[in-house]
Length: 229
Image (cartoon, rainbow, N blue to C red; front, side, top):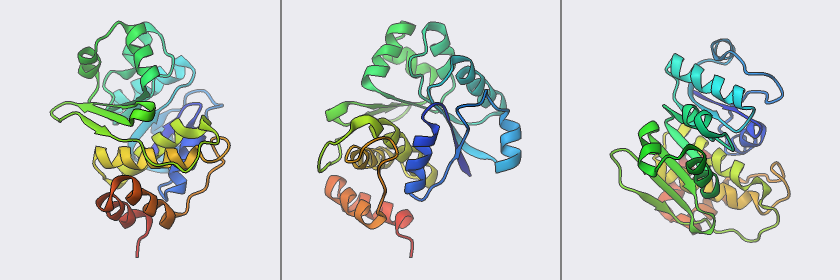
């Protein structure tokens, strides 16, 4: 099933997913919130809806629609404040944020790690040069090291590329660790170009970079989707 992406970064995330050969349905961030039933009548059912930072009313509306429809969703609360932020993330399958944004979320909601985890299923947090932390119910805490990058030109597209890689890998059916590795490597590709849309992807070269960063097993699993026979 398809992945839908909403929010101000929807087109940038969709760009990254498309580069990995896993197109998404990007809901136009210039429009008011859309009726997800009507969207699915056009595009088919969604396996996951990623709700990114946007107008607070739009974000809350999409989250409520997902809960009402029984759709799994991932949440990026951005700079939502207080009660709105807690309401927004409730029921999310994934909470995808940077460490700074996660600390901001804790500050505005007053919620502890455990209290936030009680509202969601899995937290995926980027830790800058320390890699990625994954915490969820009934699973061991996972730490994924940062991917290798050849140079830093522009960090602007890093966060959106990471999210794109995670969503694409999850849509392929990969486990969370692999999804974080794919996202981290795509983020490394993005920072080597200017802007959120400046990078292009060579699948064979990307698989080689995955092997250099995360080993042969990761590269082999990814190649099944990136380099189909």
